[in-house]
Image 1 (cartoon, rainbow, N blue to C red):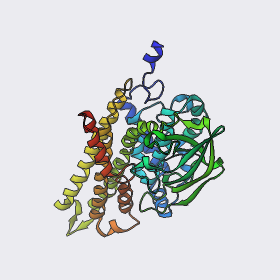
Image 2 (image 1 turned 180 degrees about the vertical axis):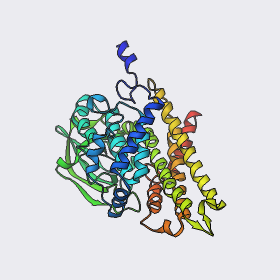
Image 3 (image 1 turned 90 degrees about the vertical axis):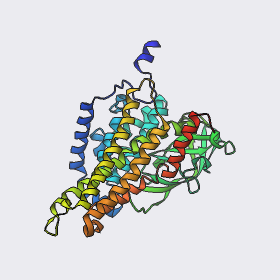
Image 4 (image 1 turned 45 degrees about the vertical axis):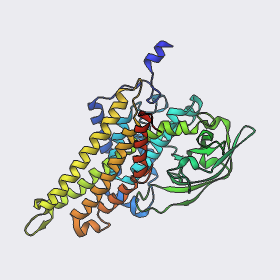
Length: 406
């Protein structure tokens, strides 16, 4: 037992995990960039946005490239890497397409990583190989019409019956919801017990009688990251599909939430890089008053701000991810750090998207250019996975907890 504890003490990292070197991360970044240049060029990103359709063949391509199970054990086809690596992949996918990056995160972090952290051996063996290979699509469903940031007020119920549970209710704003094969769904098993009466379930969406996607949502940004309202009408889920323990769903939720915020903060990093990618060439090629735009001080000021915001946000996100990876035997995961990373990066990404539009002027306002798409995609990160306002509350409450104040 002692040797096993020494070999693998962490409950947050895959088996046989070793903190990656900078060379490891640089190599992974180059591999991911090579993938995006080949599989997510400009026309694919634009078509995904304009048509509001996810390129479904992308799942298998990402699986074959080893991108979908970065934090999963090698036993299930994963890379057995950690959160720095996950941030690297998320950043570069989002740089190519914010919507493809978001769908990737819902699959690889919200579903695969949650299953890795909380699933039993039977559940992981049954579902992870297909999810990691891209054969199956994963999602997570918490939010409801009247339970967004206040997720504990959810109304979906799970009534215990012989051999399992019957789930009834709706979930809203579910990324990958219209396409998912497996969804981690939270429901009330004890409706009067508030946070102590919620349970997480593994639901085989396409095989579950009574499961439906009521509608695919038409969003301002992240178009093509298929998002839906899902309905469960007397859906039977066997007891073997409870994720974690009965009435311990909030623990499952909270254990993954900090890591979710951290990995998702890399999405805005990619969008900030994308803003620079489209702005820098344009302002050096475009001439006004006989000189390149880039020689104008107003433009130089915007470029300086965009670059500095990206570098500051990147330093914050990766320093937190590195600390978690390097403390893997007893992970040091601070709520205020993870919430702070996405709070800061999300707001800066929206600002960079707006600055990109302004630097491109009239062309920035045209849909043939990516600047508008980048700005619309970036705004989601100030709203999804907890709004900026909620993140500030979370940080404040974390400090209160440290100082013994309720």
